Length: 121
Figure 1 (cartoon, one colour):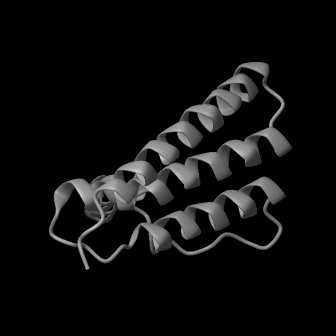
Figure 2 (figure 1 turned 180 degrees about the horizontal axis):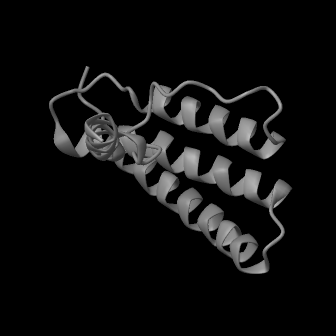
């Protein structure tokens, strides 16, 4: 009985770590190679997004926000395109199309901000 209680306590304490969101599980081990193509593509897009978001911070919160959000939005576009390639639900397909349009517009806005606020050389 004590052993069962100890296992239950351990599982209870571990549950929050097991239920991490994808943004928190950066170092999670990869699944078997037989996972669906969409999963492999989502993993690659997520890895690329997080790598590209690792910008050189300038100390200017406005510029750092804009610079980091561009790859974040690009990641959303890539994930939406994966959904369109592999997904079948009409609602999710419409949402993916809306995400692509919205994120492309915001990327343009962020790039314009960075261009007009470029530090003097």
